[in-house]
Length: 125
Image (tube, rainbow, N blue to C red; front, side, top):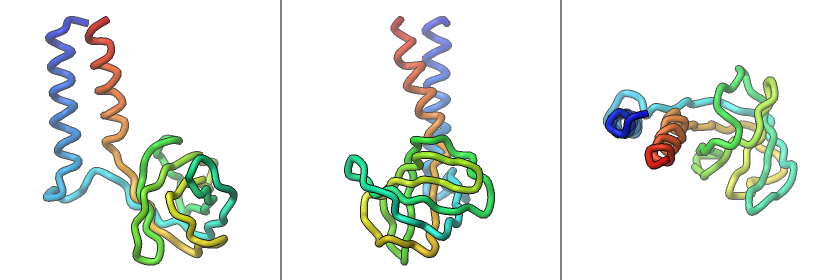
C-alpha cells in the first residue's frame, strides 16, 4: 500500500477516534449495557474476575477495555470473555462476592485504534 494512502487512512482514523471520544457529542461512541447477578470467580493479575448475566447479546470483543459502574462508583474494567448471555469482566476493585446489578460502558473506538496501530506498523514495512 503506498505510504501516502496509508498516511491518509491513519489521519482519517485519528479524526474518527477523536469524534467518538468528544464528550460534547450526542454519544461518546460507546455502548451502555446493564449487567446483573454478578458472581466473583477469582483474582487474576490484579483483576477481580466476575461473571455477569446479560439481557441482550454483547457485541464487544473479548479483551477490550471498558468501565463498570457499581453502586454509583465507576471502575476501570476489561471484558475478558463473552459466551451467550454471560460476560466475564475483570474489575480493578473487589466489590464483594455478589453484585446484584451494574452498568457496563464500552468503547466503540477501540477497534479503530487497533486498526490505526496496525497501519502504523505496516507503513514502514
